[in-house]
Each structure stands twice: as C-alpha cells, then as structure tokens.
Length: 88
Image 1 (tube, rainbow, N blue to C red):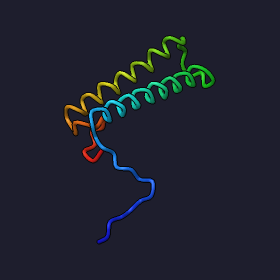
Image 2: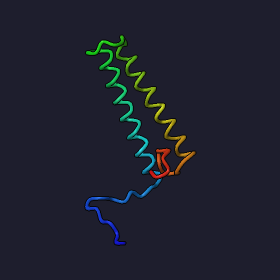
Image 3: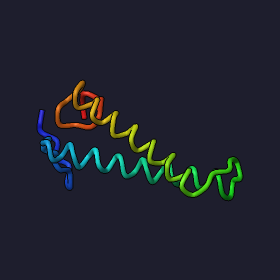
Image 4: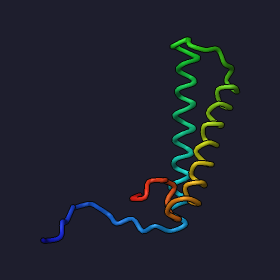
C-alpha cells in the first residue's frame, strides 16, 4: 500500500511548548466564547441580567475550567496534549 500524501498537511511535533500553545489557545477561545454568549444572553436576547463585570467573571470561570481540564488531561492522557483524547 502506498503512502498517502496530503498537500499542505503538516506533522505536529508534540512538545511541552506545543502543549502550552494548545492550552492557551483553548483558554482564550473558551473565554471569548463564554463572554460572547453571556453578552448575547444579557443584551439583545434579554434572557438574564448581569453587569459587565459579572459577565467577564462568568467567562473567566469558564476559562479556568478549561485550564484545569487541560492540566488534568496532561496528567491523565498524553503528556504533550491538552486533550484527553488518546489520538490527539
């Protein structure tokens, strides 16, 4: 069987730096997603009433959960991945 070549595909070398970058990216996107969801729910959707700082605090808590999950994934799963999936 011949080897499959995908143009533009890169092999990811898993290192401690790769893990840190992956985890930081997950934390930032979790914060932004949670902040956006809270802002939408509190603003135009009018589903809840929170101040700006309560919304930022809620998003920060979501980011902390992502951080703890990423650290736990490093302890439980592959050492250089912020995912608990064994193939990542």
